[in-house]
Image (cartoon, rainbow, N blue to C red; front, side, top):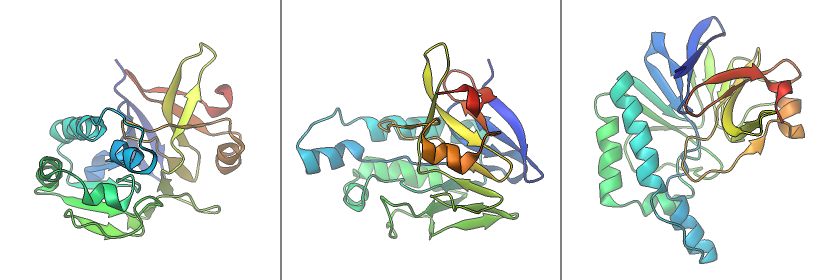
Length: 220
């Protein structure tokens, strides 16, 4: 099973993990985007619609499995880690303790997103963006950026077989990560916003049971 896809970017080797996280082996750096922790709570508060409140548990389980497997020195959460600030403040003590355990012994950076634009008192460092070895990590892609890793768009791709999966999008200048959170929708790679951002020669790496790299232009 192809649990990851290896690719070169900005002179370094990266793994696009089938789980939807980015691994930079030489830096022992794990990057995840758009966890949207507390989304069911936010939906209940704003609309009264009740969803099973398990998404935070499921997302932290998946993240914890990666941390156990890879033992990263640094974790970057690339914005929209919480569905809004009230969702962050409303996390249970159990979930706060799980995050604290994941943070122990490593550098943990919360990059600010449009859903969580301010500092959150749950450990780690809070940054608008962060640079590592010439690579900029930010939540929303900048139009003319180079050597950039971002999230925000929750990209998804559909193959001709009909299967649709969250996907990484990669071109010569940027990587856009899929959403890692359990209750997150997605924007089709064929959407004009992503086609304009990525250009005609981008690669999509579909997540799921295995990581599958295909030309972005071959997806819908």
